[in-house]
Length: 348
Image (cartoon, rainbow, N blue to C red; front, top):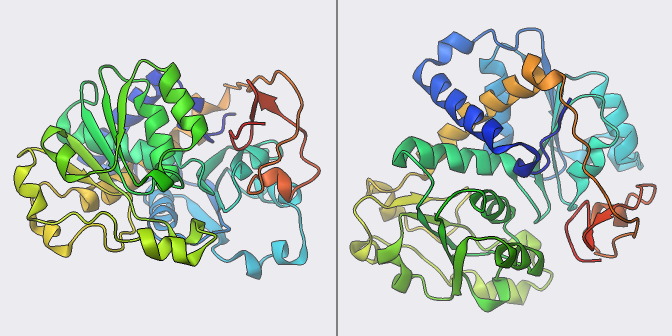
């Protein structure tokens, strides 16, 4: 059994297999209508979601399986104080695969310690979102033909954007990627991610101006300024409209630029951009359902059943980061590696 907490939990060959399978499903979806017949997916969303939740449900239903779960933790035993551990032990007895989103960073890693079936991280706080990254890679491969050699611009809230964090980590495993990180200084990538970039061979620069970078880009990945991650509402109000992509600005961009966005958008992409043939964010959202079909099949099919890989830890110091899952689930074993919390990746 294996879990997908970080896309890097899978080998590059596994990624390639999933991307290939995604294209097979897109080409002939009815061929897979009974692939997960008799199997059950548990959808545990402790935080609001539209695309991720719906696409996982649609994916399992299109594979012939069943779905149960919740989208409001206040309507579950969590509101009565049930621990994450107890929830996972119970639910994994009912399901063949669990999809979980949680506001605390490292929650999916913690959940995997107590589940008897595969756990898929559908977003843990501002940390990671591996299935969105699988979606992003599938979209780029589908539309551009390859990922290697791309100039990719990531724009917006790079500090709190879990989709950005996952995508950066994934792109570091491709060849000749040039990364342009576009954000206000207050919303730049967190230190642990910058350290990873410095240690990788991937070229990257950090800038604050979107327009100056547009002519260089093969892919532009826009993100919203995430209101729910701000402690100070006034800080959000000051930064929320800092980047707005408009048809006028796109006149200087490449004719084959891919404009992507994990959605939902607020005001960072003008509605007029929707008419531009380079706008691929709705294609991206649809591709996500097919990519998740491929992932579900892999995890609960024969290929995923006989593989176990434990993450190694080199000490046992407990994380002090306030939004780490360890802050509310005090029974969790202390786990860290290379001076960072094994749950949330923050420096200890």
